Image 1 (cartoon, rainbow, N blue to C red):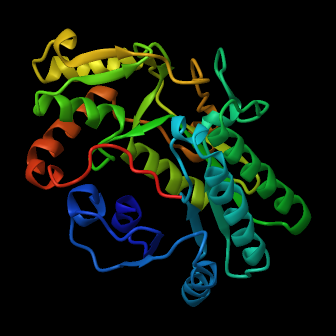
Image 2 (image 1 turned 90 degrees about the vertical axis):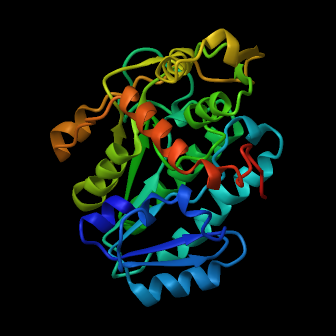
Length: 311
């Protein structure tokens, strides 16, 4: 959002929750006058959401709305299916004949591929292994069906592990920083052996904007860095930058159910077709996250550090 505003776009934001503390809203860290916000729930306020969209007639819609926690999706899978499949399908059906809509960018996930080996291209088969992944794969398939039947102008992004200042406190990098700042111990599921690429949210925002403006309708684009590492290695780097010992800060917990071992995303398509390239490293992310959390420490103390599920 901050990237789109900086590029001169007028932005309308819709979320089921009121805007949280400014410490979690990067788009409020610089002055702007081109953003309006509506607190509306995907599952309960579809009529009003449809009215807002038709009032503003946006040429681009970027759909981030989803139940997004992977591990928690095993506890109430019906909530994930309701939001990520049913509610999204109802919105798409309303928008299928919206003449003002040039591009609908669906924020998908590499979780749809399941556990993989080697570099994964956008044409890889879906093989989801969690309710969250099933819900996102189903949503993608429905959108492709609408593309085929109605010419719906959908494109997809699938990004690596997005991170950076302003991220929810329960995510791995801010969680580690927070525990070190407060002298707490963090539980690392399964010892953090899964391999991931951690990508700065600014790089993802630039890529998402490029997909909205220039991506081919019906296609998907991967957004990732060239570097991968275990989750443990990322936690160790946080400890190193903060002058803390890994052994003093981390407790090894049991592995998550059905966790995928690796995502290595091939980004050739985004680089060659869109001229996009990730420019920031996981070290940059960690450094900026530490600075952000120290700067807003008082405000962050008032925000629940753990994930709170809402149906």
